[in-house]
Image 1: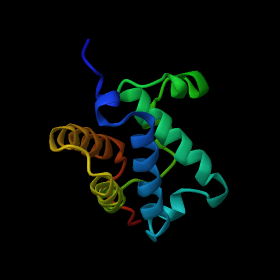
Image 2: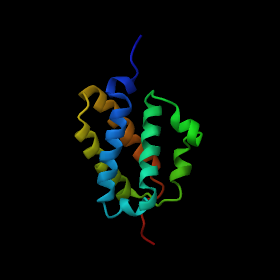
Image 3: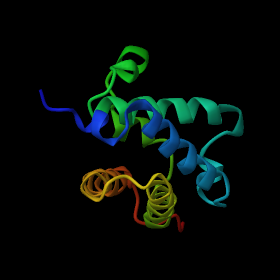
Image 4: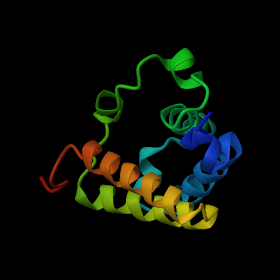
Length: 128
């Protein structure tokens, strides 16, 4: 039987590490850090970890706890412009590089993450 992407990349431990690196970067970004309430940072880490793990073939924890991901709807309350998107991508790139997955796994993961970042952008500018 073929291993899932989730198993190949390192399972839950990989996604926990990836998300922890990512949010460590987010907390130091002056734009992104304002989108995540400090009192819910642990919740944000948990939600992203369970979402990514499930998406890549891991346990269905996210669906069991939150239902369908509805990513666009869940991100709609936040102003996600080009700058925020690029900052998110930069934080995630640092996290992926820190985790150092095998190149073919890294490339597949990265393609998805960049695509998802572009899909979450909901405005072209924050200028009024």
